[in-house]
Structures are given as structure tokens and as C-alpha cells.
Image 1 (cartoon, rainbow over the protein chains, first blue to last red):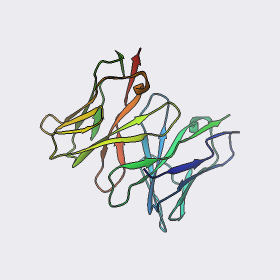
Image 2: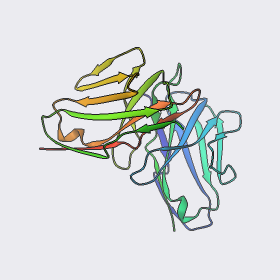
Image 3: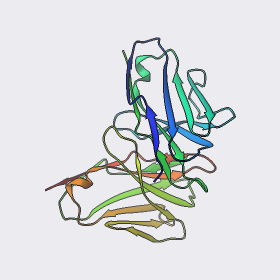
Length: 116
Length: 111
């Protein structure tokens, strides 16, 4: 199947700093990517839909000024957590749908963010 | 509101037995339903997709059923192995957008 990578896999930062997470589709183009957040023993919660060349669509309750999404190319979407706080500590996962429709999705390996 | 429930948080079975996981949904009329496997600290991996007009789908030791009347899908792993131990997620596609996931069932297969 197609491969989606994320970088970094793990990040620890101080409260108040900003953290950027990259999501890349390695062997296919993705006009749309999705960002999820997962707390321990919880389900993946959709945060936003990243659209290449246009603004991201955020889910209700997700602050767009705090979670900045940029989809600058057909293979790269970035999520920047601005002014991170300990409650932002979570597992962030991106995904991209397979070509030809929104059938199966290919997920990145995830990024573990810990805010001290 | 739309809900997906996987009513067993954990399932423990012995090697060789069949594991059966349940996914129920409400306020949805999905065209298809998907199952994913997630290992600790990793992203989910796609396993199977079943469409609304399909009653059953198989892939090797995996079998999925889809009952749109009951609004339920069952996910079976036959001849289970310790390597099958993971969290299994049921997912539905929201119209035009991303997948919505259940909380998952963590399967533990003991040898």
C-alpha cells in the first residue's frame, strides 16, 4: 500500500513554544490529508481536513489559530501547534485517502507530542 | 448525533480460537464500513472495507459482516495468533470528508 511518513516521531517541548509536524505522502499525491489526535485509550478524533492550495477545514471545537495547517504541495501537509500547553500533549496522526475516492486511508506512524 | 460504538474495550482469547469484535453505529447510513488495526504507538493500518450491499467479506483469516438493518458489523479473526494482539478500530466515512472511528477493541491472544 501507499506510504505516509510523519516527522518528527516524538517531540518534547516547553510550554509556550510552537511545534511543527510534517506529514508526507511518499509515493502518491494527496490533494487532501487529514489530521487526527488521539489521547490514551481514546479513539482517533478528527481535527481538520487539509486541502492542497486552499484553507484547511477544522472540526468543531478545534481552534484554527492554535493548530495551523498548511498544505503547500501535493505531498506535504504540516500541522503547527502554536503556544503549546501541557493539555496539547497527545498523539497526532495524519492520513491521506487512496486515489480514486475516499476509500481506504493510509496513516502516518504518528507523532507523540509532550509539552512540559 | 452520529455515534460508533465498539462495545468491548478489551477481549482476551486463547491462541487458535476465533475472535469476534462488534461495531454498532447510530444515526448513520454509511455506504461502507472499514476496519483498521492499530499497534501501540503506531498509526492505524487498513484491513478491510465492506460495502452496504455486501453481507460478508473475507481476507485470509479475517472475515467482516455488515448488517445495515441492525446497524452492526462483526469482525472475526479465525485461528487467532499472539501476533494478532492489537487494537482493532471500526470506521465510517462521514459524507464527503474524513473517517470517524470507534474507540477500538484491544485484542489479546495468549499462547
